Structures are given as C-alpha cells and as structure tokens.
Image (cartoon, rainbow, N blue to C red; front, side):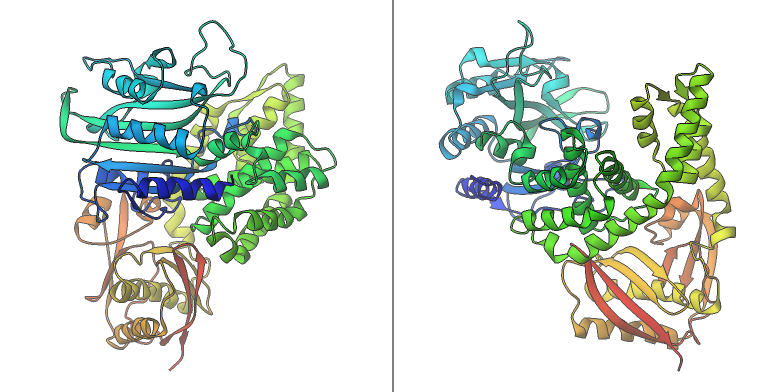
Length: 587
C-alpha cells in the first residue's frame, strides 16, 4: 500500500461513517499569532472544538499538513520528522468514546489489516479529582484489546488541554504498535522512549471545561479529536524499519547517497526531512528571514546546506533533490509541482546567500574554538555566538551543533540577552534608518508605498476581507504585492481593483499620520499585519475616508499626482498566495 492509498482509505472509511471530508489548512495558521505553524490536525479546528458550529456538520475528517520544530534535534532517527501529515476525524458534540474507539479499532484491523496482537493502548490514570478513564479502557476491551495491553498513565502522557488557561480539555487514549524490538527493562511499556513501542494514533476526548478557579466541569456536548500519523503508519504497513525507507523519501535518500562523497545516514535523513519541510513552508507563503516562520525556514535550509557539505554533496546540486521531491509528491500534493519555479528560486537564493558567508563563518568559529580550548574553556561565550549570528548568519542552534561536535557548549543565555539588546536598538532606529523598510526614499518609491495601501484596501473590497497582505517589495519602477486568495483573480476583478485605486488617486485624498499606542490604533479600526515590529508606539496613516493602516511610512501628502495605477501581472506564488505587479504611469 502506498501513502496516497492509505490516505484515501482513511477518508473513505470515515466518510462511510457519516463524516464530511474537509481540506487541509496551510502549514502557517490563519489569523493565529500565538503559534508559528499548524502543529496538528486539530489546530485549524479549535474554534469549532470550542463551540462554534462548523458549516460541514458535527462529523468531520481530513488530512492536515503539519510542521513541528520541537523535534528538530531528533530528526535522523527512524521516526521523527519536521513535516508530517496527520489524518484525523472529529466529533463536534456527536459521538464519544465508545464510537470513536470502535471505529479506530475497525479501521486498523479490518481496513489496514494490522495484527492487533501488536497493538497496545494507554488511557488516563486519573488525577486532580478527575477519575481514571475506565470508560475508554472498557471500550478498548470490548473492541478486542486484552486488559494486559491497556496501560493507565499520568496526565503527562494522556491528557490534552485546555488551549489556554481555561476551556475544553480532557483525557486521551493513545494507540501504540509493538515494533518487535526487545524490551529495555522489566518495566518497559508504551510510555518508554526506547523504540519498542511506536505511537500511531491519538484519540482526545474533550469532556471537561477548566474554570478560572482551576476546577473541572463536565461539558454538555463533549468532542472527539483524533490524529493518525501517515508517515509512521505507512512505514509499518510496508514493513520498513523507519519512515525514510518509504516511497516518501527513498528516492531522495538514494540520490544523496549516490552523489555524496562521504555519506552518512543521519545527515542524509536530515537533508531529506528539512528540504521537504522547507518546500511545504515555501509553497504556503513562508520566505527565509530572521524572524518567526522565516527564521525557522532559514534555519532548516541552512542545516540542509551544512549537512550537504558535511557529507561532501555539492550544495549547487540541491536542485536535483528538489526535482526528486517534486516527482515524489506530485500526486499527493499537486501544489508542489505547480510551484516548482518558486521553490527552486527561493531555495537557490538562500543557498547562495549562505554559501557566501559559511566558509568565513566556519573559519571564525574554528578560531574561537581553538582560543577557548587554549584557555581551558568548554563553553563558547555569548558575544562569540552573537557575532557568528550577526556577521556570518549562523543561527545559534547551528553554532550549538558545531560546538557539540567539538566537545563544547555555548552560552545561550548570554546570547539571548545580546540578541534582545540588538532587537531593541534595531527597533528604536528602524524608522529613522529605513522609513518602514524602504531602501529608497525617492518621491516615486514613496508614491508606490502609498499605492500598496490603496491596492490592499481595493483588493479587500473586490475579493473580500480574506485578501490580506502577505508581503510587498518596492522599487522606484514598480510595486510587488503578495496577498491571500485561494484562486486566480479574474480580469474583471483586476480591472475593478485598478479602477478603485485610480479613483482614490483622482480624489486627491489627504494622507494624515497619527502616532499612538498599538492598542489605540487597533481600537480606531487601523489594520496592520506587521504592527509588532514598530514597538509600543505606532504610526497610523489614514488616506482620506478610504484606508487606515499601521505603517512605518513614508507616504505622499496627497494622492493626487501619484500617476495612473496600472496592474501589469497577477500570478500565484504559493498555495493560497497571489502576487500583483503594478506600476504608476505618468499621466
């Protein structure tokens, strides 16, 4: 069975049990600044798990693209991945433990044909006045799992939530497969990390509401949220010893080992995992940077390049691996081949940037390691780590890896203090130095900056409020504006957008600027996707009665005289992300 067939069987099974299939959300959560990436199938469904009615009903199923960065240091072992696919099914106040467990058992046994003698289960043992989950244990026993393979475990292992301080939460039951490895001790059980037991499925039962007082009340309409890891399950079904031997990775690993002069399996897996994860981030609109999602992407790509050099795989051949992944994933993820040109462009650009500084940075690192060893030190000091980051683009995590290879550690606490100080200085000087990120402060570029505000508002008028800004790039000759939209913008829609912008220019609207706190700006109705980079005080630019945005500037004083706005091109740059290129023509 191939991975795509496993996914199809899962969706069809739950559709057959009254579930509606919903599409995967992007790996970057929409309208959720609290986390960088979608980490599980339940993440996009949190509002519905908290009580908001879902338009598709009370029974849902899907497959969700996920990114988890907490396990980066474990990547290279047989099962950990940065990007993975989570298949899930949900009950929003409909069925509960008995039905959920019965369906999970049926799918594993009758659809996938698992040897159920190799399945073990964990359930919640009870804590803080909450009773042990006898109901889930009884449901498993009724389904066919004997008592001796049902383990009662602590909150650490078998409890979910709430998402915040209060709200829905509850016990879960986890499904483990016995890999056949020998037990590490007489006390080895599914909670052990020795590798004998591999977790494949987790059923969360949200049956309590945690109050402000810290007590737990039973919910009137409890929910079920489950997650089945596609990569792990397909590896087991194919009889592979690890996920990297499946068709999802095998051709890429083979290509690396074919072209590397000094291959090792750990580096090959890290290269394959990180490159695959990076491709999904790029397709969903992430670009390398030094902040937030962009920082994670940069870190992954730079680890790819460093491990390529470590195994003597020419980084200039990274495009061959991209091509191989495009072929592997084209059927399961058509957005990957559809955005191949963008993938190659972004990865090549970051590779070239890093290679320019890497050699010098490694020499600087080696010099500091040698100096520290001569002085009898086993830890690289914070200023050294910060200089490698600030001057040579070394993420501190990479410096830590290099240090570990040399029997040393780094002073992460001191680095973080220096980094925070650097951020504060940069923020304080950002307006004076960069005027809101513009490298060129000419009259024409200032007009283009104002035009992005008009374009942003016009797009939301024509397409809807979802058409939010995802990025922009300005020169004295043109503007480039990225925005969220699920499909290509029609010629008629583009013409309407263009007409609306030109109407505002002709109205000769006054552009005013007010300085206020971020809270005051948001209360006034000002929008601003990147407000946090401007500090506690923000500038709010208002263009007549048309637009109001938090921005660093600069802007024209009036819209009249900006020129005629003309859209030259509209194209897709990632899944759900469109790009407009436009000019201001002289009238």
